[in-house]
Length: 255
Image 1 (cartoon, helix red, strand yellow):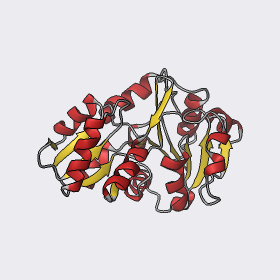
Image 2: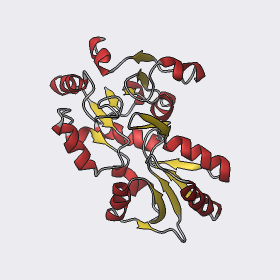
Image 3: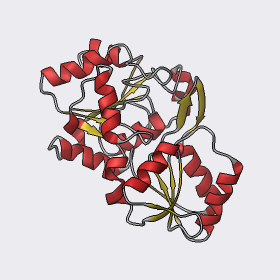
Image 4: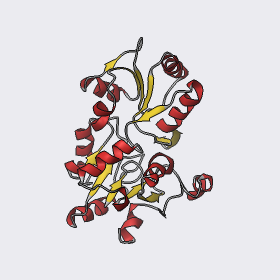
């Protein structure tokens, strides 16, 4: 049984096309009725639209086996007056699902991903947090890859804001317990120990999953070019159980 990341694992970060082996891997799971959930950090597109895109490029994920942070945000964040940062589409989605974008007296600061955060935005975040707003990350990605460049992910920004304001933060998507628990519900499984998770983000996805008892598989097809960029800096407890070049190698190893 599997949880499977998308960006950097099933599709590449540049052309957004299937990584070699991705189509075959998902087809194998479908054909053998193997339970799985695709767990993505998508916040740039409406959930159904992103799933439709994945299906269009040949990654035939079943609707019930897909989960992203937007799908659980309304349940996880009760405050409706928020100061939000992310792509224009993300901000539009927030208003459509009932949140009020409020820069004067927000109850929460919500961080999605984009590549061009600026100092004025960081100043707005800090001011709101020091005035009592809660800090919420849509996920905890370590690195964001765009146009062949690597930027700080949402998780890195959250840690910076925590250091600046002494404000702890809440995570909506990966690797929060609530998000992974929602993924378990989709396949009617009660125990994380039955799950193998595959991702290109050790710090943002796999460390939290391993703490819950999942078997972790790290693929080098996304954020990191080789294991020396990340592995030497992990504790024994954080290191993934298996490391493969890509989802294709997972397939060749019998997964």
